[in-house]
Length: 292
Image (tube, rainbow, N blue to C red; front, side):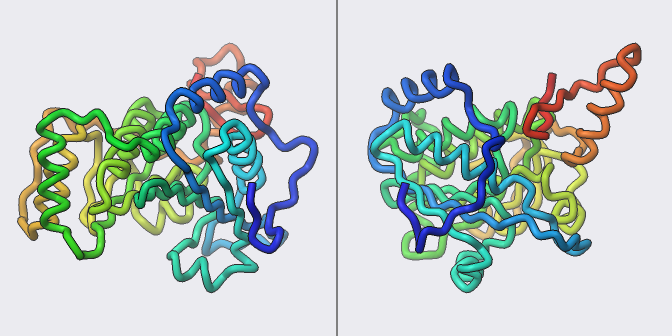
């Protein structure tokens, strides 16, 4: 792990991490799949004793730091630079980073931004996305590869299109979309992909009027529900060409937005009333909630 002026969050002995068995499995996967250097910039912010109603508190900076530290220790091609957002406020503003933790992963001239901790069902998709970014060539089918080539031709020497995905760990759709958008971000420099685990940011969710997930924005245009990779790239291509066309998807599957605090309450109610119907959520030792 590298450091920026020894910048790192304060972590206690009880900071959660991966089990020894999980680390061994992950190490084997990274050894098999990482193809080139992977640089991780981790932006964090210490929890403030002052409660603010206009912005979300950085709940999981310590947990994310511990997680990324463990991941980076498993492969020599992975390097990490932590940034304290309070110390590097100007740089954070330059990168438009407002929520902590935020991770910027770079490899081979491409990058993907991850905001929030990839808890529960999102974690395997997070690892897949990091791995895809290091591939010299992704195993894409001909239709998808053709769309990527069209995007790169149109976007040559232009700023990349902004593609944002908002997910939670409490629905079956989010994890699938997390991995798919990881592939999209790794496939082309023509788009700038940000994946946000929005459950831990209820104020941001309210400000962005998010009541269903997964939610996607492409240069600010909103779309609710799931995508195939081909449909997603086709929609991005329409927007890149300034075409007012919406791709018709076979299925538009989404679920209600549930914040982390709401999920914690549901889990607590279920534990307090074991004879009632299960809530579908389980609280972990770190305070995160994952689907049963």
